[in-house]
Length: 62
Image 1 (tube, helix red, strand yellow):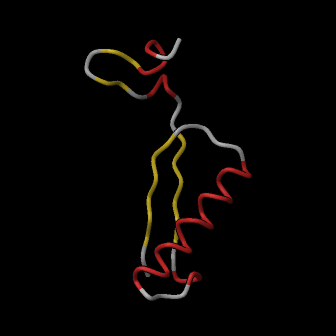
Image 2 (cartoon, helix red, strand yellow):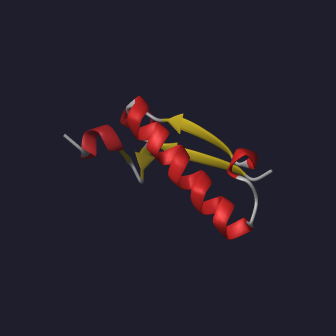
């Protein structure tokens, strides 16, 4: 059972559904496993909680 963990920005439910479908389809084809065997975990991160170097992403994307 492949497990995909994705850390990314806030997303709409539709974006998450599209992402899960695309990832499961591609992993299924590449690994030759059923799409139902693919587990996708999405962790949404606010830019206030991510730093790059000495700067928060929220400060960089103002």
